[in-house]
Length: 235
Image (tube, rainbow, N blue to C red):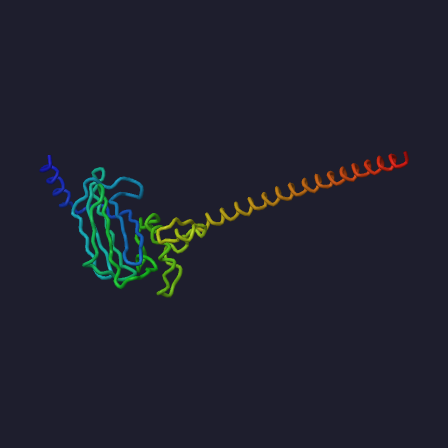
């Protein structure tokens, strides 16, 4: 029953022994916000804890702290995310919400804006913290075009916008590709171009041969006509 579940949780809270770890976390930035998704689980790609409790979230101008307890297979876990932020935020404009089971979303309002952060953490980043590529993709173009700072190699800078898109599609949320993908694409294009040139040369060679044969044939026909004309004149 619900009451028994609550009693079990109270009993677990009284125990001082627990395992502490960083929750799987992914983040991305726009010029105005930092978007973070936290999952209370052992690693990325697995479901979140269904019985997380004692959730605590604290945001200051330059830090983010959150913690939550969870019972995983009879083992008490404490998930802690403690970040000294690279830039500054407005805590009053920042917010969070619960998503699916064992997941929360956090939106940090940058202050000042617009701004491009070098990375999320001022100090060493926690375990299980990764760049949120899908979200980063949505803001990559505007981040790349931003010029009001003194650095270029921010986290995620090496993901470039696809230069082959049409001009009207050159928006901040346009598709992007990695440099490695661009290199592969370029190699494929060069290979295809070589094939096309080879085919063109072969076609040109065939046309030249046909043209030469045609000229020879025409010369032969003219020669025969000339001979016939001469014979008729003699008669």
